Amino acid sequence: MDLQLANKVAVVTGGSVGIGLGVARAFAREGAHVLIAARDRARVEEAAAGVAAEFGVTAHGHACDVATAAGCESLIAATRDTFGGLDILVNNAGTGSNETILEAPDEKWQAYWELHVMAAVRLVRGLAPMIAARGGGAVLNNASICATQPLWYEPIYNVTKAALLMLSKNMATELIGQNIRVNTINPGLILTPDWIKTAKELSADSGGDWEGYLQSVADEHAPIKRFGTVEELADFFVFLCSDRASYAVGATYFVDGGMLRTI
Image (cartoon, rainbow, N blue to C red; front, side, top):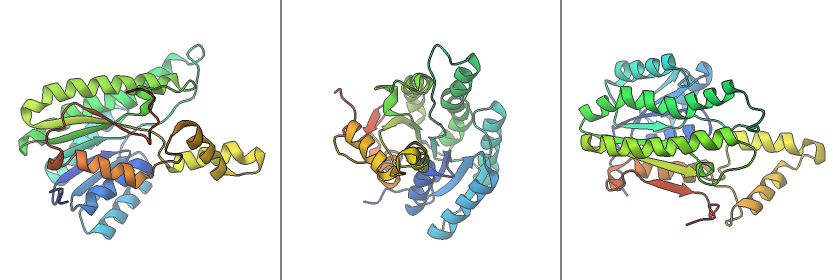
C-alpha cells in the first residue's frame, strides 16, 4: 500500500530512541523527511544521521527539551528554518513515573504536566499554522493504555496521559476545519530499551533472567502473551498520519495485544 508520504515532512519528539526513533524510521522508509527532537544532542544527531543514511531522505536532529516553553519554541523555529514547514507532528516525548499520591511533591506533578500535556499544547499552537499553510496534515499524540487502564504505581503518569487524551479530542474538534486530523494512540507493552533496562535491574538479584521477567509481565497483562515490537507500533503511527486514514479524526486507538480489559 502506497501511503503517499514521499517528500512529506514529519516532526517527531522523543525521537532519538525507542518508539520515537522507530516512528522516525518508519516515516523515512515511506520517503518522508524527518526532524527528530530529543534532549541529548549527540544522540539525536547520531540518530538522524543514521536515518538519513539508511533511507536516503533528509533527516535532522534537534536538541531541545519540549517540557519547557523555550524548548518548544526552539523546535518550532528549527522546523521553520530547516524545512519551511511540516505536514505531520508526532507528540511522542514522555516517560513513566513511580510514586504514590500521598508522597509525590507538587514539583513532580508539574514536571509531568509540562512534558505530557503542555508540550503538546505549545507545539500544536506553534506548528499547526505551518501544517495548515501546506494544505493540512496530521497530528498524532502518543498517550498510553494507562490513560484508561491505570497501573497503581504511577499515578502521575496515568493522570497526565489521561489529560493528553482529552486534549487530543479538543484539538481534533478545533483543527479539523483546517484539514488537520488529530488522533491518539494508546500503546500497551512495547519492547523499548527502557523496558529492557528496567527488566535487567529488577532481575539482577534473582539470577538476571531479564527475558524471563519480561515474559512474566506479558503473561500477566497481555492476552497475546508477548510484548509488541517498536516496528509494529511505528507502522500504525505512520498509517494514521497518512491520507489512507483520512476519515480517522479525534479517535483513540489501542495497540496493546489485548491488554485493555474493557470495550
